[in-house]
Length: 218
Image (tube, rainbow, N blue to C red; front, side, top):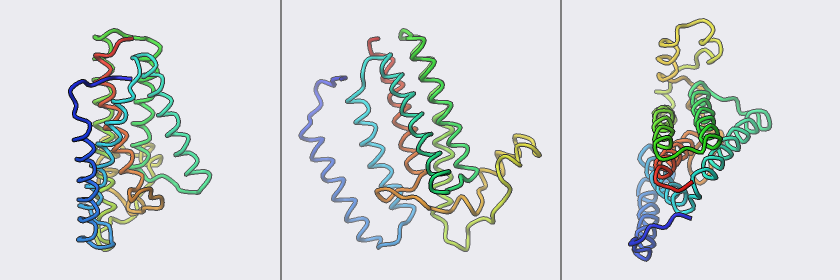
C-alpha cells in the first residue's frame, strides 16, 4: 500500500462529507431530471473517489501493472456481457471507448511483463496518458450528447464497422464525434451515471495510477 505522509485524513473525511451534502443540495435544487451539470458533479465526485482509492491501494509496480491489465480485461468482459447478455449494442462512441480500454490494457500487460525501472515506467505512463486522454475526450463527448434534449439529438447514422470499411479514417472520426441517435441512449445507469461517465472515471484513475507508478518500487 502506498503511504502519503502528512495528509490530514480527518479533513479529507470532512471534505468528502461536505461534498456529498453539496451534491444532495444541488440535486434537490436542479430537480429530478438529470442535467449536464448534475452529471458532471457526480462524475467529479466519483473520479476523486476512484482515483484516491486507486492511489491509496496502489501495490508495487509490477503487480500494479498486472492488476491494471486485469481491471481492463474485467471491464471488457462486463461490456461484452452488456452487449450479448443484455442485448445493449454499443454505439460508435462506445466502440471507441472500448478500443481505448483495450489499448490501455495492452500497455499495462506489456509493462507488467517488462517490469520497467523509473524511465520505462515514465514511458508507459506517457502512453497511458495519450490513450486515456483520447478515451476521456470520447467519453466527454458522449456524456454531452446524452445530456441533449430529445429534439436536439442527432439522427441515427452508419455503424462504426461500416464506416471503417467505406470511409477514410479522418471522416470516420469526424462522423463519430458528431454523434448519432443511438449515442444518446442511457440504457444502463449505476449511481446516477451512465456508461460513458463511468469510463471517464476509469480513464482518469488509470492515468493517475500510471504516473504514480513512476516512483513506486518494483
